[in-house]
Image (cartoon, rainbow, N blue to C red; front, side):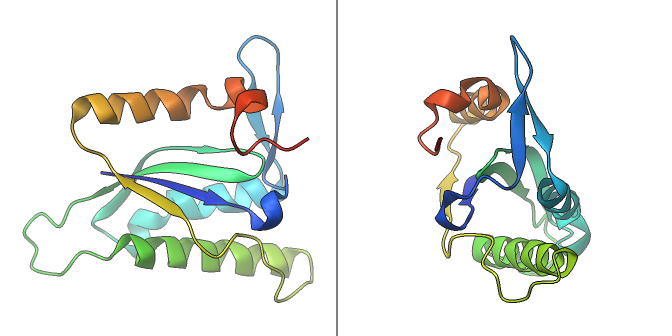
Length: 143
């Protein structure tokens, strides 16, 4: 399992708004809906990769990815392959929907962390689950 964080270019808040009282939730913009579509389709492109948990925030995405070669003999794609495919397709569709081409949607790189053990997995799962409620305290928060 890998924990991946992808930020938008210049931390632009284009993917969603955080709405609601008590336990706020992301309300996806068109760009956020396009992003979610490709997250949910990772497994169609890479059969051995599954998004296990994710959250789309205003200016970043958190995903837990499970890679399971399962002895099929085909080499598993790298995290860079998967994230490159994801960012490319999201960017392409967002730019087409805005009749713009070449506009950067995401920062060049991403952060990844190999999840080591059940306690690490549960800590990250909880972090993703509660991220919208803690948006104002998030290290990626911009006003």
